[in-house]
Length: 127
Image 1 (cartoon, helix red, strand yellow):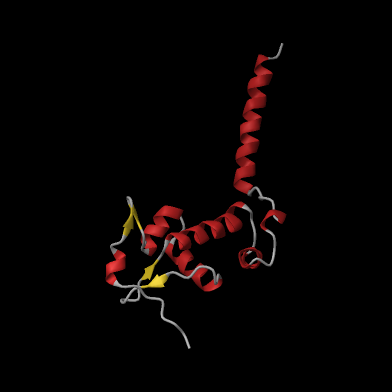
Image 2: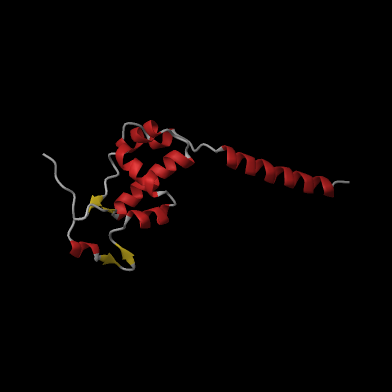
């Protein structure tokens, strides 16, 4: 037996302060910088990410869903983990602190260029 995750039209207009309580997939994409097709893919891959659907079948994200998206984003993009590894962390099967951040190639290149520029400036001041 499956339970349909829906919400009423009245809840859509509910808000907390200036923040909307429910977000469309487009809004979540803008907030997180993750493309909509990736968000849909993550919904299939991660049990922890399960936005509600309204009566029209459109995804409706809650604040807690956005937090999960941001955790997945950090695990995959900042820490360089695989989807399998991120699933273990999110499910609690592995400790989050055991996986230090991994610096990607682009960041490594940027850091190298900055250091080389600093070295060049320092050498130009040498006697």
